[in-house]
Length: 490
Image 1 (spheres, rainbow, N blue to C red):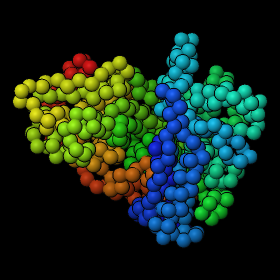
Image 2 (cartoon, one colour):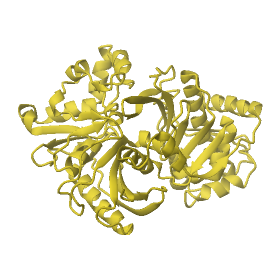
Image 3 (cartoon, helix red, strand yellow):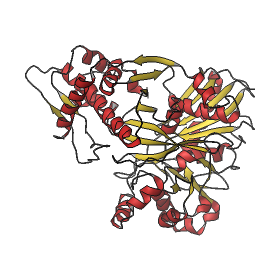
Image 4 (spheres, one colour):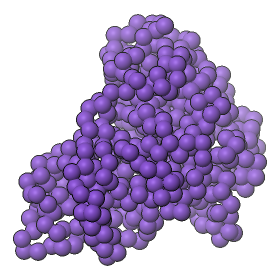
């Protein structure tokens, strides 16, 4: 069998390709940024042709960096920015309009109108999602209505999330398919059945014939054809949305296992097994992956601000020169000196859901130094994660044994130790922190037969470091109580 797997990570600001071998060693890597388009306040778009161009560029560059020869790529796996929506011509694969990005708020009024009709609970029961312009359903509806000719010419058009667009282009237009994780982010999928829902399609006025086939996350997505710089016939064997791919890449295969990706914000997913858990804390219920006929579900929660709080210390307050300096500065004091920072710079997410909340720093005295504020910032990130994970455990009834972490801020050892202390569980950091791309590679390898099953995949996982809790549970509980008091002031 060929030695390498090509993993595509199509993100919001850049497209990355990794060539990974069977030992999960990265043999080649390439990344390219592409333009962000802001046509008016609250609107965010991408040129899908630019996404395709960068995809071709990074695939070629990563394969060259790995010194891989033709025939050595066993499979391709794709992970992508979720919810971003593309509308394109079937004949050419060319987009007919700019893609609407997950961040775009242009359909907020449509979502509010549906809420006014009392439809949110019904939609949430079917999809596991809240009614928000974040998701794809209202984006597709908007794209179809933006030009009258679109609805008159449906047979010539196709739509989907970015994974489906890349699959279409990679296969030379032969395959129009998505995986269940991406489909579960559209507001159009019944997550219990794993299929497009006729009632939801009618509500959002989205015709089923322009949507992709919904497939398992590991399996057959066609083969490459007429791709610049790639030989024909490479199988595409895995696809998943970025956060689900990270959960898979962290090998969180057991019910109750969880991961947190620390980026600008923080995304937390917990495996809930075969159960669709309905949250009482405003968390999302979503599909984690489907392998064969077996579907695994997850709870998802997010903190709006994580690494962005450190960026604010750098760019807003100017108390650090680079983001990497925050760990050393925060570690120069033994504690935060009674200072609490609630980083609600863009509101509070789960479990509060207060978009009107604003950041608060409390407990400042004449003895407060910038080091105390730096440490309180790291603690504020960790407190947010702790509250979401406690809500997940309460909703699911599962007890968290450890938390696997990735993302840029996961490299901060002090933050990881604080997180372990507050949760009272071990924090596990993997050797390869690019777990989103790793998840795509593992799914593709599973689909291609490189690994037999998830147990075989788990044996390939390699750790970098574990952080064990050093704080007494009673002290952690007291700190969490003080945190909640600070949140009340936000």
